[in-house]
Amino acid sequence: MTANAALNQEQPADHATLYEIAERCLPGAGLGGYALPEDVRFIIHRGEGSRLFDVEGHSYIDYCGGAGATIIGNSHPAVVQAAMDAVPDGLHFFGTLNDRAVALSEVLVDAIPCAEQIIYATTGSEATFYGMRIARAATGKNKVLKFEGAYHGNHDYAVISVFPTAAANYPYGSASTGGVPTTIAADAMLIAPYNDLDTTRKIVEAHKSDLAMIIVEPIQRMIVSQPGFLQGLRDLCDEHGIILMFDEVVTGFRLAYGGAQEHFGVTPDMASYGKIVGGGGPIACLAGKRDLLDLSNPKHKGQANYAYINGTLHGNPVAAATGLATLAELRKPGTYEGLNKLASDTLSAFQGVLDKYGIPAIATGEGSLWQFLFMAAPPKNHMDMLASDQASARALDTELLRRGLYILPGVRRFFNTALTDTDIEQSLAALEDACAVLTAKS
Image (cartoon, rainbow, N blue to C red; front, side):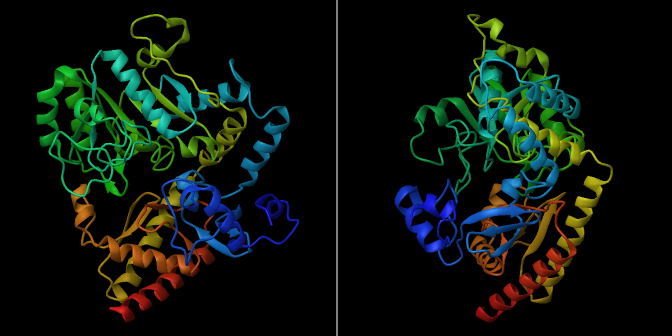
């Protein structure tokens, strides 16, 4: 049987057949950097509300949420309707504006504190890459400072010191993947430890003559910025004429409608967005000050500091429609209060189960982001994460996968507004069973 036959339901689909095809056609039988353990892997067929359903009909409580994109759940009726309304008008256009992309741009500029304009992209990776290009064009400087362990996408500049196994020789890092020119780590990127303002200041002062920008995640995976850290970066950039950029691909429209900028009360010069802005559709953006983003104005082609930005799917009308529908749902009164209370209450209940079984882990989170970490207190930097018992964390996560919770072992996860009381009860029961198994093995 072919995958197309299974998709068209000519014959009943099954995991074994589809994985046989995937292993032949896809590296690692995956779609990127993640591959589930073979004994728990499955192939998704559809999503509805808080649940995913595989090709054999089994359901899973979805804590992955499309890497955080589906904050209001899978196949939300308003989002589905928006897509259905948009598709007959055309799946894709290029070369000039479409009405839905214009409408979404106005919503984004109104919502994002730093936004005087936005530039469309297709992915968060593109948005961070565009931000670096614009910063270099604006300042005439070459270097960008990022923080150790930060993930800013998959382009060559972003993959320096993403998964280091030991502290960097600050401010120099190394590529976390093959295929990256050595000159990028040596000449283009600087590395500092997260939440360490003193070390960051020393690096900035030593390299200020060639430092275009600092890029930072307001929450770096599950490492929350400490009080004063983001404001300290803002002050440092103002002092030395350096551009400050927030990577809000995850935190944007998640921590609050105004994202991390609203949540932490600090406004950068630029910020990258993805995931929620498209409601799961392929759309992202770079937001920021008009004088910076106008460097990409096509009327400036041929000028020395013109920053070329272009992409086939930028401003895709169907993705813009699903983004508009998602953001409209998030603007409804009480949405964030309800989601954050659900997260807080559930994490407290999770911690109670961990404590009951003597599992030396914390159920930690900020807003609706969360994770189980085998450490005594929330981490402050990447070295704290390295010092934690990551093997035990993955073992717990894998047991939860076996019990119907869709999470990626060792990876941050998300609450969504579609989760029900029944989902939470079943999640707690799954955690009880998983802890009992781990306790019996120890």
